[in-house]
Structures are given as C-alpha cells and as structure tokens.
Length: 140
Image (cartoon, rainbow, N blue to C red; front, side, top):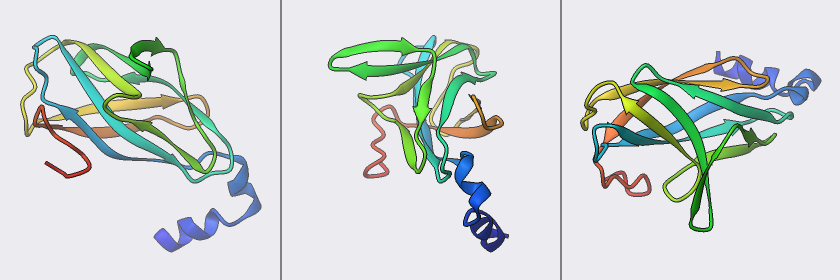
C-alpha cells in the first residue's frame, strides 16, 4: 500500500494538489482548568499549497489558531501549509488555544481534534496530553 501511494505521487497529477500528513501532536497538561495549548506539524508532500482554516474539538468550547510575532501572540483565521513544506505548531510559535475546556485534562489522556483545510478533507488527530514541561526535542 505504501509503495502504491509513493508511486501515485510521482505522476503529474500529484503535483497539483496538497498531500497532507500530521505528526508530533501533543498538548502540555493544562495549568488551568479553562485553557490549554496544542502543538503538531502538518507536512505537505504535494505540489500545491493548502490552508489550515479551522480546528475543532469536543474537548473545548472553542479552539483558535495563534501565531507569535516577536513577543506578541495574535489570533489568525488561517495558516498556510506550503507545497513541499511544513506548517509547524510549537511552543513560542504557531499554536492552538483550547478555551472553555469541558473536562480536566491530565497527562496520559488523549484529545481528539479535527483539522479543516481549504482544499483537503478534514484530518482527525489524536493529541496525547503530556507533562506540562514536555519537550518534544528530548521526548521528556
């Protein structure tokens, strides 16, 4: 199956659409009961860009996307996923904000989120809740 998918990407038609995959998703254990952050990477192996337009989750009243410019966090309506590139959500950069949490989220739990894109279909992601001090570079 993987070989068939790889071969399909070599044809001319694979270069005119996004091919998205999500990895490295996690949520640091929230320090408050009302709000949490979320991080992940969207890789695009396709030849066309896409746009992340919204994120939904049953775990929160709302989920918003933010980017950090300098020392300022600002909410954004969408974020580009470049062709043959990545959209990275990380501490100090792009991130999700889960507001009005519906339950207390502790380390070891999993939060389901759905990513919505301008061109591609929605992608469901299982986001594990890690320790509040989790560092993805070290895995601790």
